[in-house]
Image 1 (cartoon, rainbow, N blue to C red):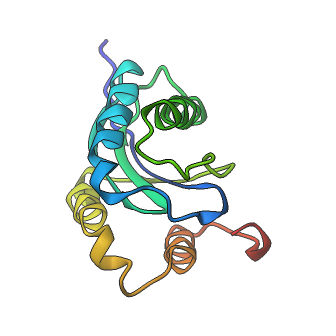
Image 2 (cartoon, rainbow, N blue to C red; image 1 turned 45 degrees about the vertical axis):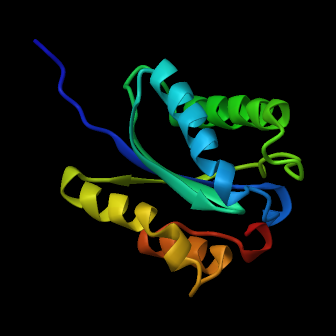
Length: 147
């Protein structure tokens, strides 16, 4: 019998200290590099976008890779590329940890639209408030000390 599955993850991670260092004019190059890492892990990228201090990714997770390993590979690989590229001279590292939320096929377009509109969204709300909302909406307990 053939196995069938769909595992959409909305992944969010931020720069260390929430530093606003991801310069807009070079973000597309960074996103293309991250897309390559996602493809190397046999996952499918549906959308990636962000602002100066964090990134959102929507991807389909291949069943042979764990979420933690994918995020580790994306963060480690992109961090090395960022430092070598010189595009983001004030970037030090990604902050430890990440947030990840599953979504259904029926919600996929809604999440893609949300990720597409990050710049406009963050004119009205801070990253911390956005993260709190995402955590609450997904019924995830959190400690304010770690946000």
